[in-house]
Every structure is written in C-alpha cells, then in structure tokens.
Amino acid sequence: MRLERSCKHLDKIENIGVILRPQSPELKNVYFKIEAMFLEKNINLILEENSANMIEKQGIDFDTLCKKVDFLISIGGDGTLLGLARKAFKYDLPVLGINLGTLGFLTDLSMEQLPKFIDDLLKDDYKINPRMIIEGQIKDKKFIAFNDIVISRKNLSTMLEVRAKIDKKAFNTYFGDGLIVSTPSGSTAYNLSVGGPIVYPLTNAFIITPIAPHSLTQRPIVVPADFEIEFKVTKDTGAVVIIDGQELYDLNKDEIIKIKIATKKSKMLHRSSRDFFEVLSEKLRWGN
Image 1: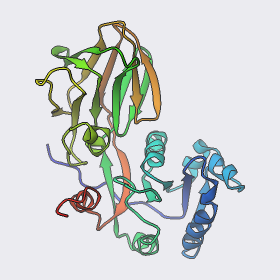
Image 2 (image 1 turned 180 degrees about the vertical axis):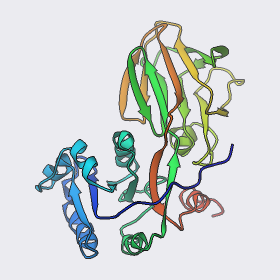
Image 3 (image 1 turned 60 degrees about the horizontal axis):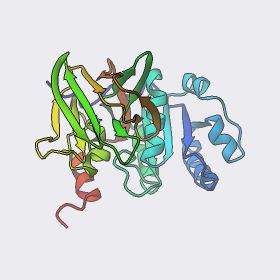
Image 4 (image 1 turned 90 degrees about the vertical axis):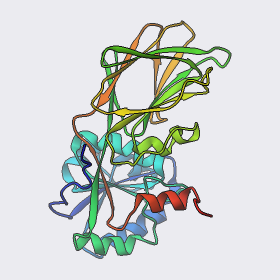
C-alpha cells in the first residue's frame, strides 16, 4: 500500500484556534508571546473557552471555534495534542503542536522554532501529514483513538484472558495484564515501553502488543489496517478499556470490543523539515 505522505495545504491562514494545556494558568505569558508573533503577521488567534477562562481571557466554545478557524494549535505536550486531535477529528482540521513538555514525539515545534515556522507557513513551506485513527466500539458506545486502545486488568491480583478475532476468525487468546492496540503514531508511546515495535507513523497498520504476557510465545504483531479486530474478555476478573490514556470504559465478561481503521485521517501540521528518523535519534538518543 502506497503511503500518503502529505495532505493538501491550507486554503487560507487568517484565524487559528488555540487550546492550552489544562490546569496550567502559568501558560498565560506564553500565550501572549505566541499571540504577538501571529498578530505581527496579521493572523488572529482565538482561544477555546476553557483555555481562555484559565488565563482570564475571553474565548468561545470548541464547536463554534472549529467552524471559524483554519487550523488548531495545541500548546503544551503530547497529552494536550492527543486530546485535541480526537476532538478536532470530526471537523477535519489540521492540528499543530507547540511543545512545552519534555519528550514530544508528536509536538515537535518548540517556542524557539515558532518565529521561523510562521514565516515558512506564510510561504506555503510546511506539510500536513495524514495520521491513521482507530475507531472502537463496545455495544452501542463508539470512540476514536489517535495513539492506542488498551485493554487492562482492573484487579492487580488477577490475570486477564482475552480472546482475539481478526475478520471474524479466531486469532489468539492473550493471558496476562492486558494488551495494546496501537496506531503507528502511538507506536512510540505505551507500545514502545512494553517492548512493542516502532512503526513509521504514516503507515496504515495495527500494532497488537501484549502487556506482561504469561507465555513467552505471546509476541507483538503488526497487521494491515484493513482488518477488523475483535476482543472479548472471557473471565469475570474485571477489565477496563483506556483510550489514549485519557478516557476509560468498563469491559465486562463476554462483552466484545470491535476495532477498525477510521475512514478518514487526522491531520498533523508540521515543519517541512521535520524528519521522523531525526526525531527518533534525538528523543531516544540513538547513536549517543
């Protein structure tokens, strides 16, 4: 399958929606600095209402914001960007992440790089990368994930038994603490920390990685994203489904969670010079 390396560019750059890291009123001065940089280029910033209230400014509700702006900016870290990417998905808006955290696999733009990026933005020198999104469903409850869907045990003293099907055919039974179904974008998150593979972020694939499996034969596997995957917890030991580390749903005995690729992609706005392999080398200190 040929990879989609870039979406079309923005039609215009006049109004930008801004979401700040929650519960971080200390970002007020940072926001004013960013606002000044864009206003100098005659670009307006509009705050989402919760972010605005946090720094004692005026803002508008998220749905109205998305109808007014050309793209969105997340100011914080990867967690802030993840939450925004899911909320913005239905509006088909590109999202730019300004990194104020430490690791930043997704939010690659620093405050020091922002002035040049704004100039490049106005010169049409940037890229919008399409990122695979997972759709999940438990009974009539539907949700999406940018990074991963995790099935985890509730009780530390018990082991999960999870039966898996791929395209309606029995595939595996997992015994252990749980498992992760990750997108390529999420392969450098929880998946990486439990020994799963790193997958190039513009690939269309699911990464299924067991967490503390009770058998050496249970290994991570990468499968094409055109499969539909089902999981069922077969014992009444208590399980929870975690979406991008931010949303939780109970998964009861014999309930099925269905997972498939979304029909459209999330859009991530990046510097044209951003290179995934350079990010890996920097963040993971490869070669040091």
